[in-house]
Length: 105
View 1: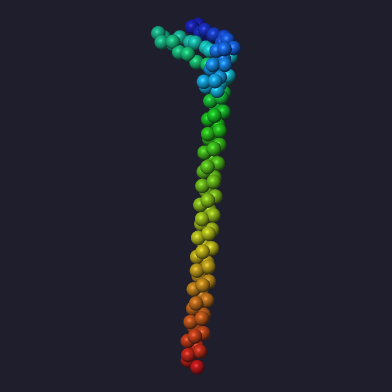
View 2: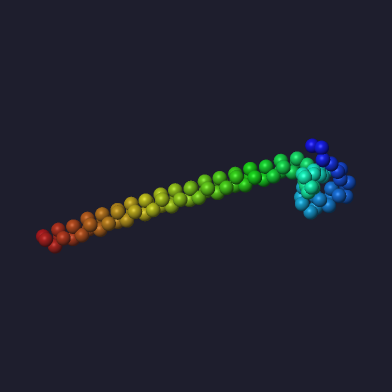
């Protein structure tokens, strides 16, 4: 681009930026779009943004998978609980029939 300036930073400036933002910037690029200048860091920061976005996506997927696993476990537990209730009810019915049979004799 025609209206672009790259400014090399001193070690002190790099240290201040690193301390404030956690980013290691060797230079600053200034571009002029129309009448308003725009300041941006070098392309290394865009790679950092992409990495952070990818991490966020992975974390979101992992969170969704964890929720799905928890839901599946809850369903299995409910089925097991219903099966236990059905078994207890069946035993109770058998016991009642046996009691009735004993009374009938």
